[in-house]
Length: 417
Ligand code: UD1
Image 1: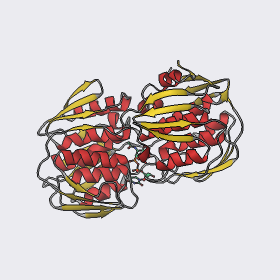
Image 2 (image 1 turned 90 degrees about the vertical axis):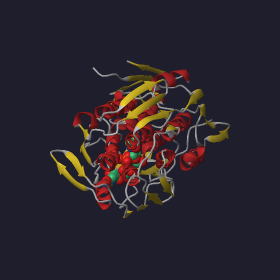
Image 3 (image 1 turned 135 degrees about the vertical axis):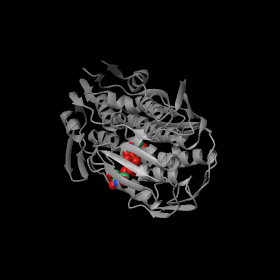
Image 4 (image 1 turned 180 degrees about the horizontal axis):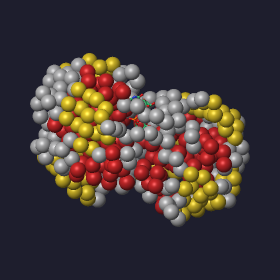
């Protein structure tokens, strides 16, 4: 039987937490090392399962990986392998990020299609179109994306149909070693993209426009290994901020970057929380029941889709009614059925959820369907009467190191069973 969280609601969370390195950045930083033969070092590495899986994938590709406390050393061979098997790829979607680096460095990649996800379909057409624009031949064969570029890649101007985070990263990582200039228009602007771009620059890549909608890359012949610290996880930061607001608590979040969360923090202020920027972090304090807030998820700098379950959970116990609109992943309201089992009053119509706040939820067994939904359900359990069991805790472990232990330290009655 898989692990589960047992939560008894009622605590006001109080205390201090430290934000680890970002999952969505570290996995791509690890993939990017494939571009530079020799020993690369990544620090501020979070202690999560996805990092272990990425290490296994890099080892299969011929790298030697040394995992130390909070860091990984990745020694990349001159000629890496180029096949990423389904058995690993299906466990973490970020493994698709080896596609760009392998195509340009090895001239070929065989990467299994990651398949479906509990947050809806996740096509790869924008990644594929981008690599094709750089001159790679791409086709799907027996469940694998197969790329060929035996003579290398050539820079091109590419306009993305949507500012996809993964596609921007894959195209940028391929373009750094392509001949000539690549321009990515309608590029994603997430802090993770800036972090990966900065790592590539430290390796010797020539990139400008990071964090804007147009990224320009001048290809270079070779990259050198580098050392880089992963940026702090803004989704974990945001989760603690919502945890403070939902439980009428007071949490100091050390290592947090308030500038990466402007809209979520503004929304929390509208809900009645007091958000203070302190040295090396932020403090979120809530004295009363939150007020309902309308939110629409959008690519960065908009409200992050990864914090949508947390804002839905908060609105479920808020004073008033709210509409939450999901604009990034169409299937991301699937967890709402689980939240309804705790008594939440939510009606979903397409990509809108209408939430009628009630004073208290009522504990019940629920199932985590993905990382962020699982975290949202745990937050809801913290304000439910009696016992809530969140099944399939492994989803939460994928993105959130020691979540149960940290909640306990803040005063919650939470056990992993
Ligand atoms: C990354 C994050 C994820 C976050 C998301 C949006 C990682 C490992 N995951 O996912 O936590 O929720 O960004 O901030 O970093 N799309 C296409 N075709 C493509 C690519 C994407 O249609 O080729 C669509 C997706 O289906 C989705 C939207 O674009 O509807 C956004 O996806 P994208 O930004 O690519 O997200 P990921 O990189 O997969």
